[in-house]
Length: 77
Image (cartoon, rainbow, N blue to C red; front, top):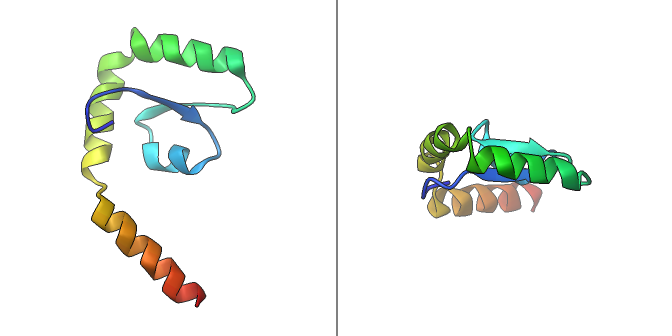
């Protein structure tokens, strides 16, 4: 996403949460749905998804991921 590559991912996963409207979500058991979403992402929806993806990616960092993960571990421990 940070490089302007549209995302097609499974709905109901952590990636769906991460994409936050910047990716196309598909039932993970729907191969035809994935194929259709890839065609959409490479075609008419490419530029919009690419732009939204860059914006979403700017709001994430590996440092934030590490901080949030450590916080969960601390809470569970």
